[in-house]
Image (cartoon, rainbow, N blue to C red; front, side, top):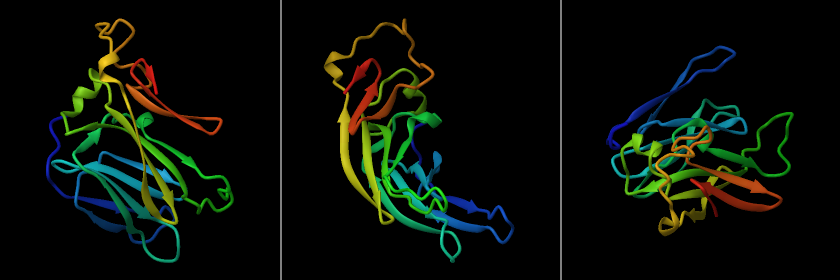
Length: 183
């Protein structure tokens, strides 16, 4: 809940069918681990930046770190599980699940802040990344309009069940819900 710290983490990937676990060294903290098809992404911060680190779990080799995307001078704007969203690209093989192509989205706050502030402050933006051929590419961000924010003293709720922000993909369009605002 404090300001982001500069430390390293070790991620342990343990095979569910037996075998030796793999220890993967990360250059940042771990705030969340999310599925990307049959692979994964670790999202975490260091003292100033937010990192999206792919973990390759498929194939014949041991688990290994894949591509990493760094969003400079940012922190998560929503750490609860439903803040992250991954929309697989059409054509995902449901038999093998190997395809981890798609769009991922996460609420972010700029210039870092204490984690507990997410319960009282809205996110500044939702950032979108494309995952294609095991590589991350930025798609952009949708921003809240700070000048139009109305403080209702938590009458409707400062920490609803959905959190303070989330992406919405509807009929080929992309929206962001941030507090009471849809962008």
